[in-house]
Image 1: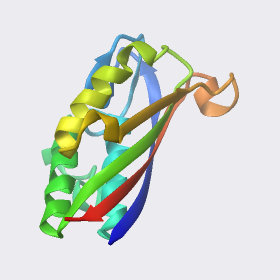
Image 2: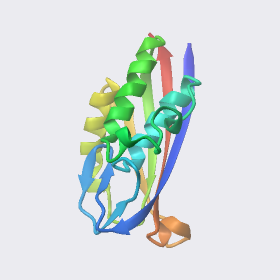
Image 3: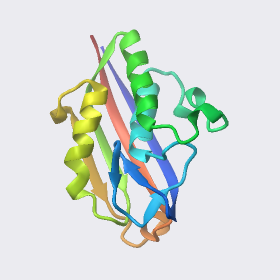
Length: 158
């Protein structure tokens, strides 16, 4: 039996904030604004897993109104989603993601992100795909106002 989940996330960008994606800090003068560490990639993957399990979204489990999650490492959320997934008898088959960010260029950081996410998801690196796109100077992403991420996950019964 297979289950498919889709997740997405968007965060405003501001000067002086850290830019963390897939658990990797990316050198940048703009960073994402959020209640936690604002790791939009990890949030989208977490949402995709929760969606595949029909368990709601990341906000239902880790509310931005809850001070416990203030500045939290987003891998805490991902590891909890993986725990719930395993409890329900599933494992990740693969995950495919897209990061929409005008700058900086992400290619030099993608392998490090894949490695960290593979460990957290308990899969081989060949089961984690990360693609980076720009906004072509269009809309909030293209105008350096936001980062947007999307993720699709395939879960398989253990």
